[in-house]
Length: 239
Length: 239
DNA sequence: CGTTCTGTTGAGTTTCCTCAATACGAGTGG
DNA sequence: CCACTCGTATTGAGGAAACTCAACAGAACG
Image (cartoon, rainbow over all chains, first blue to last red):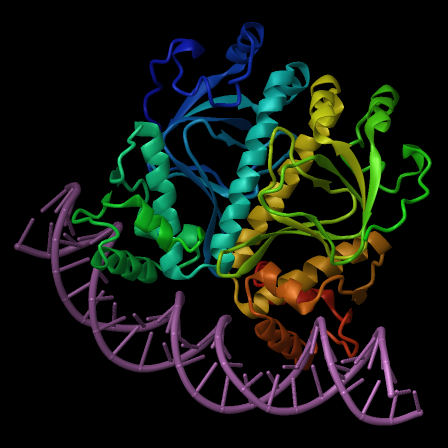
């Protein structure tokens, strides 16, 4: 049940023009990319890939949030990646995808069929260079998350996730004050899968942080952080 | 306390010539690389980088094993990467390193000062392409490990680590039989840091796997796996 | 107004951690 | 050669954290 294709006329109007895989491209490189791109939209909750699928296309998230998850035979699920606007999906020189990919919100993708994109990487150096940068950043993020999964308490895990979202939102909205408000883009279950917890533990720790005045919410999605520094202290990661 | 520099005369003799960052290079590209490379050796237990250090050089592991770890202010430690021969250390376009890097065994590195290497990446496409491939592989491995850290039991974690080492060793030694023997390259503490466990839990689960006949050892380092498929079943990951 | 989906809260249990004692091997010096 | 020490590993007892199972609350939707 795909949504309608957006009204982006050219890459010049694209909201992710300057942080996606194309951000370093010269005008002539952009022309090559633009020639093979196409848009696809997915409604919230829709699968984009199933683990094991042949990897037909790769692409960038233009808008929305999507998740990568791995599932064990008995049903245990671990999220292993969260893709935000500008992030790249899929991997060149790989025949199949090893994770389930799901649209957590309505998602729009700027897609390239994999084979032409692989050829293009070899011809246009700036795409490959940017992709390397982005992959290294993702690897850094994955390692940060390994510390969270392996060594933090449930409370620290929740605080870490909220702190990450709060600072990222504050950066986007240029909010420089100590207080921040944001809308959680994910459910309790998604939070649990991200953090290696159960939904009950997520719920309990959210309540505990609220009781302790570190966050505030009545609606389940809209979170207020009165003092970001106090929340940061709860992550356990900064002296 | 560095060891003596090895007797590798040229890259043609290098044991990692065909899987390191240089593996796709043409002869002329190799000449550029060879012009700026130099070797460094580290004894087992020696630090190679401290988190926060300026990243003076990058390079490949020629021999030995080294680890990347992150440490919390209260002393909790999580390993976030394990570098084997051929693996690349450091990251272009980054001023400082964010992890502690330690030589777990005696290690030899083939180093390049970072700045010249960054210039070289822009000029020699095959280095950047290979580095992208390697980084994507590392990202896959990190995601696999996130599942282990987030969702597996202590027993499954130990089984997963032993299974990974056993299969990797079997591949190296072309051992096609069902039984495998190998020497653990790491201590119980290192295993614990890898798996997000305490050393006591590692020890208990090792004893339990031994009691159940899945592994055998008397010496603490030399492990025998009578039936690799049975060990695989204990990882919880395969139906 | 019922149904469904999501989230919260409680009670009891399991798993893993903490603290503590002990064992083992390697290296050192008497 | 033997005692001593140090680093590493094992094992046990008790406790804390997170999980499981279960009941219930609130919002969204037909």
